[in-house]
Image (cartoon, rainbow, N blue to C red; front, side, top):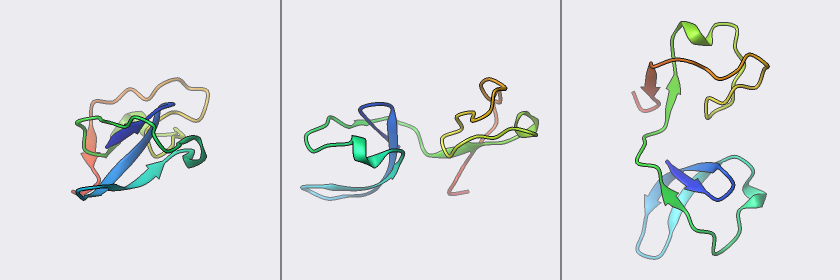
Amino acid sequence: MIEFPGNIFGIALNLEEDNVGTIILGEAFKIKEGDIVKRTQRIISVPAGEALVGRVFNSLSKSLNDKGSIDTKIYIHISD
């Protein structure tokens, strides 16, 4: 995973000498040429377990309902 300014995340698909292909997981229109992008040192994963029952969340595990943050220690890599 990589992080763009404004707490926007992406998945690096390929690394070439002069560019990196990514899937952007957020509001791509906020990203502009010249922005500094950082590696997160994390592999994209999804939360799992009982803490998700009855919850609504986005692709980055951010809660979308008024029940607070999702409290789980179980994560599964999407490549598994």
